[in-house]
Amino acid sequence: MPIFTYLAFDKGGKKIKGSIDSPNQVLASIALKKQGLFVQKLAPEKKGGLNVNLNEMFVKITTRDKGIFSQQLSTMIGAGLALTKCLDVLANQTQNPKFKRVIAQVARDISHGNSLSWAAARHPAVFDNLFISMIRVGESGGEMDKILIQWATFMERDEEIRGRLKAALMYPFILSIISTIAVTFLIVFVLPTFTNIFASSGVELPAPTRVLLFISNMLKKRFLVLIALGIALYVGYGKFSKTKKGRYAIDMFMLKMPVFGSLQHKMILTRFTRTFGVMLSAGVPIIESLNISRDIVGNVCMAEVLENVIDSVKQGGDMGTPFAKSPLIPPMISNMIPVGEVTGTVEKILVKIADFYEREVDYLIRNLSSILEPVMILVMGVLVGFIAMSLVLPMYDMIKVARAGA
Image (cartoon, rainbow, N blue to C red; front, top):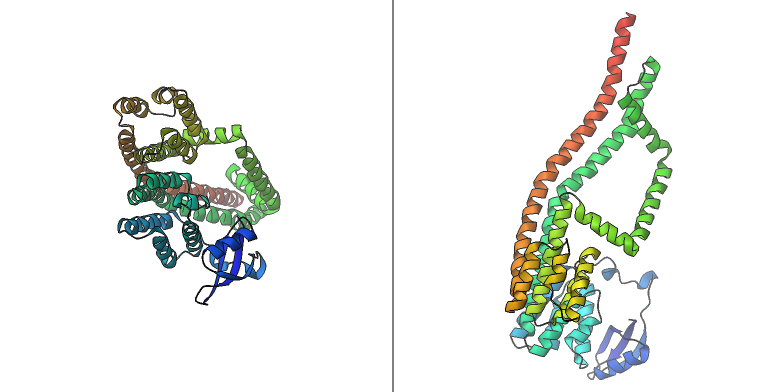
């Protein structure tokens, strides 16, 4: 939506500068007048050049920002503060300039008589469908503070899992980068120096040394070709991943990978069961809960399973049957959900399943860290050992030739 900057005066004659989101300039002027402002200048926000907002250019609204916002908003609403007052306070104390502008815009929309869910829906890049649907339920049920806490707790758990995974992969990632740089340096700069010595001695180079020489020549003489090939593969992968069959094949491959596939599968199941359970416990209708769960799982293979469940529910069927037909759904889920449907405790069962898979994910992440580190060290040792052997073998042959000549 277009952003308009304005210069206005309030009823006390105080000069006010700011910006407002609006479909057009006329509606922007009307919205400012409703706020009791006398508009002097109003123009579309200029983009590019010196008018770019440098404070927001490299700033990202993180999950932590949104979680803190939700918790604080819940606390203030529970204390009896008016919603617009809560949002004004949060906008003033938020350190993130981009999030500050979004909160201020939400507050302005609410001051014009709109609901929080409507105002938040105008910022889909910040507030997802899960948040908006739960807020809508909170508005109708009068339990906004409890809904906000539920959403914040859900986001914290999801972010915590992602954080543990990143921490587990950080050391192997850094080690792999260092190993790649070290090996490339040895092959490109160190090996050619020794090959000149080997060539002058007339010794026939062994196979490992010839392999490394081939790689060294490719890196030095065909560097641009390799770069172009890498770019072509990247572009081709991007186009393939945007097709329906390509995306499905890639996501299925990710689920079938050794170690990582099992981890990703359990993370998807955790996200699905947690989201679905939280939505149902908040009072969101089952179809809407399934739709939102389908959109956030992040895997088209699992999304297809949930689409089948949605079709079954729309036709008056149950959820257990389509779940049981899918190989991506473990028996625990496909067997426990029908029990929940009969007893009316689906949301409680889903939360328990999510807790179980969250513990499984935590266990796998700990094992992943303990497995990857020695594997990376072993791989690095093998590579360095291969390079050392490629240099030592010709030297050994040179010594034999020298002794034979003597």
